[in-house]
Amino acid sequence: MLEKRVIVCLDVRDGKTTKGIRFQGNVDIGDPVEMARGYYRDGVDELVFYDITASAERRGIMIDVVARVAEQIFIPFSVGGGIGTVSDMRAVLLAGAEKVSVNSQAVRNPAIIEEGAALFGRQCIVLGMDVLSDRKMPSGYRVVIDGGRTPTERDALEWAAEAVRLGAGEIVLNSIDADGTRDGYDSEVTRLISQSVEVPVIASGGAGSPEHLRAVFADGKADAALVASMVHYGDYRVKEIKEYLAAHDVPVRMDCYAFER
Amino acid sequence: MKTGVIDYDAGNLRSVETALRRLGADFIVSSRPEELLATDRLIFPGVGDARAAMEVLARHGLAEAIQTFFTSGRPLLGICLGSQIVLDASEENGARCLGLIPGTAKRFSSDMGMKVPHMGWNQLYHEERHPLLKGIPRGASFYFVHSYYPSPSEREHVYGTTEYGIQFASVIGRENLIAVQFHPEKSGEVGLRMLENFLFGAV
Image (cartoon, rainbow over the protein chains, first blue to last red):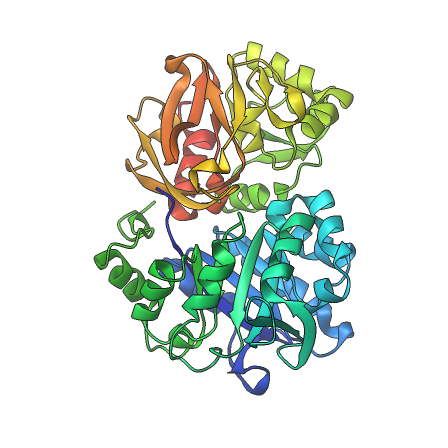
């Protein structure tokens, strides 16, 4: 049986992991490679790195981080942030990432999804989408870009369907309403998108406790859930989250805790 | 003991390389048949389209090299797409494949409410009938990403199974050839153990 994935997200700025509520008041919280190693040992199923480096000339730092992570952790990870061309994609994939994620750039230029899927395979192309509840939109959710700052005219459900048609192999769905609140994921929009597309949907935004993950798997029909602050600040360990899920009949990968090579 | 990794432009080579390096393997990555045929063990990884992969393999003389390597009796490991192209054919764009194991690669049906591709961690069930599986706990999870799955026609060629809507063969083999549908190089410590079995074990 396919297991539900617990994914840790690391925002990386100038080679350091950083955390803030939606790009405001970011503070450095550690070395991404060291943190990745720690989460790997703690049984995380996958990692996501977002490059929020401000300037293009410092992008090389991220490639170096990706390469060092690839040498040390043997689970899938994706990289997003500032990826707007197939050559950006190629650089990240060649450095050792499994997948690349596109967000604002894909809204501005949807062809990037198609080009990336044709070159690298659709399993490599993740669509990141930030959504905000908005009754004026047909699905009730509007796509916003630039880290939540710029509203678009795109409806969340329509955009998800179009991106999958173009070649997105997976969707990271981030609720701006829930992000940073630690009050739980938006299960409603997660279920809406997850049930309408045939690719996996990763819930993001709002995680504060293991119960929130259980809820978004059960009610939101998410295939995976992203966590950040709840593990970065030491409130929970990945292992504790997975133990809670396993105890509540969510299929998660537990054999990694018993196995020693 | 030298291991060859076939480079045929089919992605994800980097992660196989880093895993082999971590395990201290003596290996080369090459697209040249003569170099690969001089090794003791051969790995052919791959993601992507079966037909495109077969075309590239044929163009570089690599399809023939794999056949020759197989006939020579030296150990061969196929990964992901590598577990599909060893069959006779694939439903993916009607690809004709290597024909080392009788059977075809079939597409998962999305009718059953299952998402396609099958992406994520899923359990491998096996009876430890092959040295590759030595020390791998039954039901251990491995990382999968695929829309087609191997469907060998003979039961004896199935060494491990996984459940996704249906029960499919996730480890298949014949004689000195063994092939896995998942990515051991991305499956944590248990995946590294499997690669170790292939690199250093009595496969």
